[in-house]
Image 1: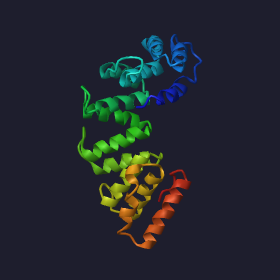
Image 2: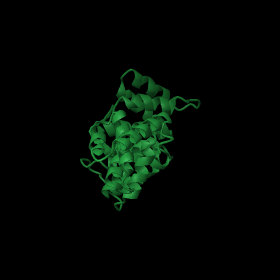
Image 3: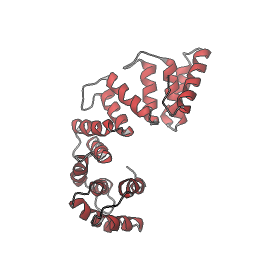
Image 4: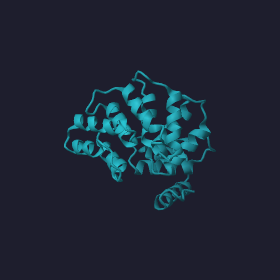
Length: 233
């Protein structure tokens, strides 16, 4: 996670404030001033009262070391409290920690568990990561069909990495029947949406396609984009 995301999370998590939670408004005010240490202290007050957004925010602070020393174990503690209340970003955060190969608590099975909970709630990045874990067989039995399922769900939300991987699966015939038109379409969309890893892929796939097939794939990509991924062939 990047530090700039916290501002967005605060809007999402606390914009509805109608109840009075000690520490929440003070935590936001301190954060906006750049006083992250005080922000963490204030959010801890609300987190200890059971405020789910503050529990997540405290976990996030420990995860990246913002206002506190970076500490994965403390991050897990606070993320878990929020995740067990259904907080999607906290569930995703747990998955992120458990897949960190450089971390002290790397555990692929736990990562799959928490990614799946977030993915089931529609979290696109969790869906992408779950797809990768099925494709690679990390924490689960390797299953290309499941990988395609999760890539598709995220791709249809506009996630560029998932669009790229879904296109590759079509191009290779992994988890789906090989289809160069769909392979070209999805990798083309991924490139359009800024995925650098997809930049050369449409051209590589096009080398084994007819001109009519390329035209059809390009038209499908435009149709998919125009429909906000609701009509992708």
